[in-house]
Structure formats: structure tokens, C-alpha cells
Image 1 (tube, rainbow, N blue to C red):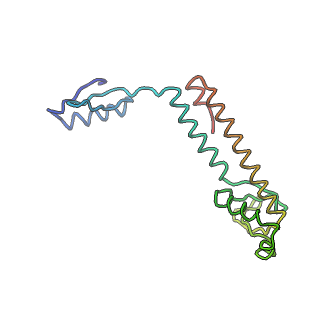
Image 2: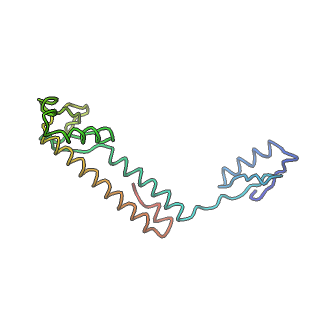
Image 3: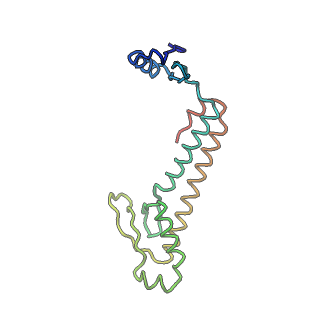
Length: 172
């Protein structure tokens, strides 16, 4: 049915629907050629196109790893904290003030941060003092850096591919 032509002048909806069904089953599409429709093969995507698409997936994978949480020992025990953008900005802003009177006044018992204690299924509040807030931020920065390095390694894998099969073998 490749290259089959359906005239617009004598349009037959039943025949068009049959062409649509055949195209879906045979990696083809219907192209509007002006006075008629024609069934044409969908060309195989090039390696460069597939690499660009995979690099976008790597970017999303890296971003999800960064914002998917991290473990810090800042409280004195392993706790998995959120690492979404809002949490990053909030904690970094608090860290800028740990050595101020404002921090001492606002957080006399420590800065409350929610996270999952090791093995817990519900979040708990951990009260972090100024040194612990700084450690928390350092742990977050290390987490982000580690995720970015993993993303760079995946980008290098993608860029090194010389075949579609190599590209499809990359696991995210």
C-alpha cells in the first residue's frame, strides 16, 4: 500500500480509514499531496536525531536525580531530605544567615527541616543548629555535583555512540 494514492476529488472515507489502519500497522503515514493523499513510509530517524533525543532524556534523568532527594548525616543520623528547587533555595537562604542574630532569634532550638529517618516511611522534623544547616547544604551541594557528574558521563556515552544499537543500550 506504500505510495497508494487517494484522490480528494473522489474521496472515499472507508478507503481512507483502511489506509490509516494500514499505515499505523506498517510504519507509514498519509501525506497530503494537494490534490490527493499518498501513503508514504516513515523514514528511520538518523543517528544524530536519536542522539539529540537521548541527550534530552539524559538532561531530564539528571534533573530528576538532583531533585529526587538525598541523604545527609547533618542531624547526626542518616536522613533522606527533599532536594527540590524550593527546598534548595530555602535552605541556602537560611544558610546565609546562620551566623546572624536573626538566625539565633528565629531558630533558638534549631532550624526545622523535614526528612525521612533511615527506614522510616513518614517524614519527621529535625532541628538543625547553624553548623548542621551548613553541613546539610554541603551535603546537598555534593549530591548535586555527583548527579551532574553522572549526567555528564551519560552525555559522553551518548556522544560516543556510533550506532543506533549502542545508543539503545544506554541505561538511565
